View 1: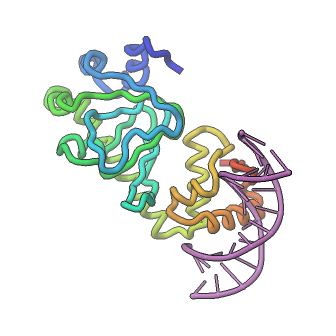
View 2: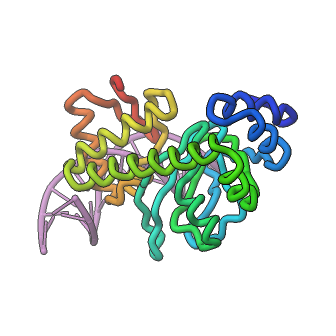
Length: 216
DNA sequence: ACATTAAGTGATT
DNA sequence: AATCACTTAATGT
């Protein structure tokens, strides 16, 4: 894990291969770093974004949230990525459509939104980065839509567990059945039953507050 | 020992 | 697949 005073180093490490040098220098000058703890909320639905976040390390969970506080997992953002929704929301100065929570301890780079437009004109790599980011997010959303439309809940659940394991790089998933139910917009009882089935079929092992995958 | 929270189960829609 | 009502198990104070 990078230490706070090595801002320039950290930025170089995460973005050198994505963006041109002159732009990296501007980023170092104008952006600020923010470290978020595990489970910390970065933005709630309805709040206004003041800066554009880029995830340097760690991972962020982005979900849709309705008025009743129910949610649905949309996609994850990993190192080097930014959130397409936030770009849109920043430029239009409108309220956030989504909620973002840190899945693990993560490092964010916050960019003032005036820079956004300036850099769009000035740097080719920035334009490409933003477009690429939109594309990736869109594909990931299609993936979740596909899962909802075409997979049964048990298949969706297993996919969810695999995704989670890949993302955090561990076979052990520290989530309660309740939390999983919320992400998949289902209910705890149903998830418990399906997990039990998965355990019986030998795909996973159940512990309290923990699920162990057999393999990815 | 008691309260709280997580997980399991049968019955019903 | 969701909801209800209830049980059992694990954990914190």
